[in-house]
Length: 451
Image 1 (cartoon, rainbow, N blue to C red):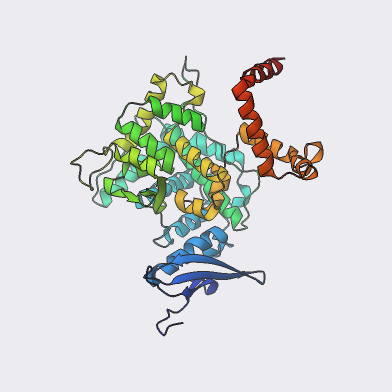
Image 2: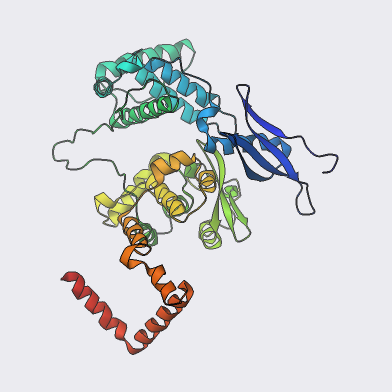
């Protein structure tokens, strides 16, 4: 190697060396940086992974991102001494604050999580982890829906803001407890805290899974307000095609094709739409940092068609109020298209659609995690949506390779390859179409299905 070879870069946490990056290919005519290879050992076995060409100051961050997908639990400190719900919340929130800049959450997200931990502290208190039960969690829900609980916290928060010389903000309680959105978000954060405790082998009781708080329906109200439906590709396409050319249609397109969160959509500027070879990229900035999602040339063209001739690059794609009103606009558009309530979706539903498409297409999990802005574990736990069509396809695939339906075995016996069999099938279908026999076959198949 040349004399100016950079030194290896180590990923060390708590005096433990987790992985090392070694330069293995010097810069060439078309590249200005060294190529780096990540090397680590697990149970005596040596593993390696390419990090690509990177400047030296970015290698440490690339190492951390890769390692977060390999063994995320080893990145945080030892919290084995935790024994109360309050200490667990503090440790969980503390490790979020200690994240490096590459994986750090936004200040707004941290503030929301901190507020949820405050509700948990006030409702559950310094209760030992061993005594935590679903009854205790239901008690927390009852406490948060109580007007006295909210009034007590509001009084304390106003006094603290006044002591800091700040003006207290927030919706007026009006003699009511916290609403279903606040309660459900607190339950979600509690679930994250408990899962984190289990991952670190703490004494978190089993069977604890905070359920969403079901709001009480008003008289004459026959449905819940939640829309957790994930649209199919055909449903998303049909809805998009029927939309008028408005900012909502642009938001639906970007969310569907990039998996952007609603907050990331609201922060988009035209300079974040970056053309490239064979397509381009959409730069998204959200609670999990900054990422660039690749889009095809056709999708990029559709996005740029919404940009006026004299709009500067720093102009926002959407109004500042999009984060508050975008979801309402999406629901209203679906209602105007007479989409059934059980098939209505949110922008997060479009994100789940994009995530499912990535996973079903066989995108490498590390590439998917980089594009989605979360860890591979979260991808497989929350976004790997399985449909009946995929279950049936899996069954057909198994039938095709086992037992009496061993198609590949039958081809081998007849001396045919898969390509030859497909060519024969295509030829037979072409002859049927020419003689219009395929119409009779389709009708016969429909009648057989009805019978």
